[in-house]
Image (spheres, rainbow, N blue to C red):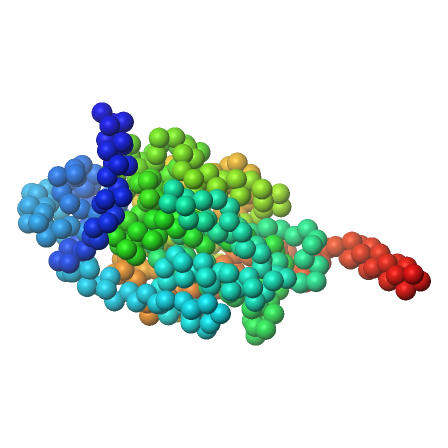
Length: 446
């Protein structure tokens, strides 16, 4: 029966996506269950209600947010009341707020149009990436690491600055856009790329040094199919175009905690780990860069959290305490910018639930990467996935402060200053210089 549902779902998906779904008069509701009875009311909601969780149920005293359709609102509210659940209306008309999320078109070679004051669709992001690479051919390398089900490229970008860019450095991988509806994620990742590339002319000395201290790898839009669906068919689409939650599809505790085997569910993990082209491509890419990989940072929304592995466990494992202290310092830096407050901890301690098959958890366990953090960006629930365009740039600016704090903390142990680009490879630099002099002399003699 389950297999039949999957087959029917995949057959019907193309037709469903042809009919844009709108959320006029859909209501965003918030509740904080104070006992198990109230919590179980949300956990036991069936498909008989047309509801979409923005913050799913996890544990008592953790906020839940969900959107309910106008057709089901009355019955839902009555059942909630009978269970003793107190609901707060956050948005009366979700679609009207979505309509205020401005989306601009990018024109090739006019990079000033990409200003993080509006959102952009998949093709426009890719055009901007191409221009970034064309304008900085020595520092920026653009490549496709795979194709999606709908034959879109999954683009990755390598950025290395400085004259010694061919020598070994610690590596950083930045993941964005794994969940389609979280538009602020690819917005921040593209902003961070721009900051790194333009750092040589920046007045921010920390940014300058950090930008040259690492070898950078960005995947700004891991789920381009799903992201495009949110722009054309269903703004609240979370999964890829085959209906799989990519951040439940990695091979770590796969299918074991807070996932669904129902392909209609937002947390459907797929038939098996790495069943999806996107997650498989990312796994291959990370494996190819795993040597000297020190940081893996994934960006999501919303809630304002820094989540430390492992998402499937309540325990503090490996170097949790070290990463926690780094996260707390980064949270202070973020708050210093605009007052935005972040919490730091495991998934259970922050978002309030356990889950499995998460990308960052797989990276940490598989490659023993020391510093892995998943960011849940703005806000804390007033706008949620409908974060307005006016908040894109402030979100990017404050998040960049936090990321720089994380990356610089590694080099500030015991009062050590940040290394200059290539510090520690003076012998190699010297040998290369000598070799270049020899080649110059031999060339002149010829």
